[in-house]
Length: 107
Image 1 (cartoon, rainbow, N blue to C red):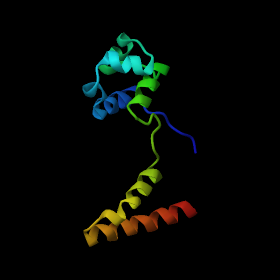
Image 2: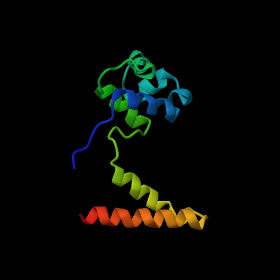
Image 3: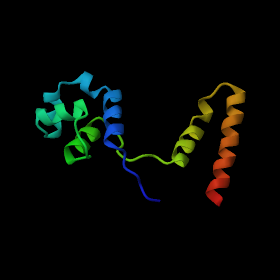
Image 4: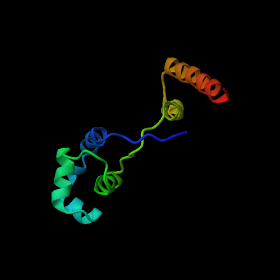
């Protein structure tokens, strides 16, 4: 299956949501990923049109996946949460989704 990269806008949103720019200064992030502070500033502001090596380095540092996960991967991650659910109705729904995933993977 072909992997689809996230867009610059998606990565910018995820970088901000990660809190990396709130926890550390741009200068510190740049020092750690070996990118100058000005480049980190542009990444933080969302002023990038392509996913460069610098953007990838900051994403890696912030532990952001740059590839979109497939719908099946999302469903499998939902199935992994089943044991942590206390509501029996939610468990039933997750079981039904599990059956659907099994059927889709067989076809």
